[in-house]
Image (tube, rainbow, N blue to C red; front, side, top):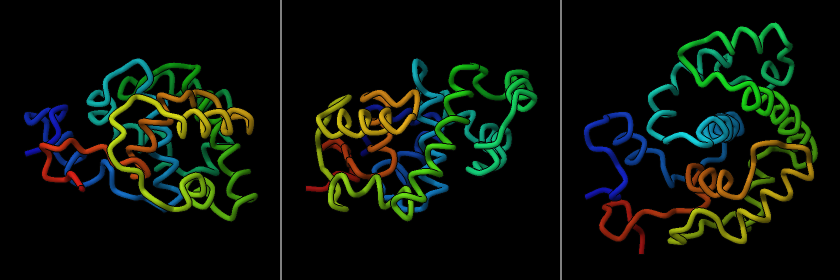
Length: 178
């Protein structure tokens, strides 16, 4: 059994649930990629984003943080013309801005992983089953103070689930941890 939200007819969704969602992640490039995907997901279904994930990866230089941080108007226009991704100027500009902030956080904390996991003392939180909580409120506020955009509490809560800081597998799911 899997969580009730999984579309069993979409192998990308099944694999995401079975192999990624709720699994602790510490690699900064991977953490940045998930942040991009959560930003792009705002107002859309996660399944839509999963279906376009490889296109995002290709369009965004394999999620190279330094390259993305240096994108200019020419690159923004190129992305806005790419029919394989979500073409939203505000989201694209937020990703570029957030790449710059992400690099600053890496310098300050040694890695983004050190920063994001410090909020829970490197511990996983189990079974909140919410769309936001005090932790996502706090991290969202901190990221906004640092200058990030499109990092509201709901987006950050979903991000924390994706990177495994919050493990919200349902009781019916084989991935559920007591």
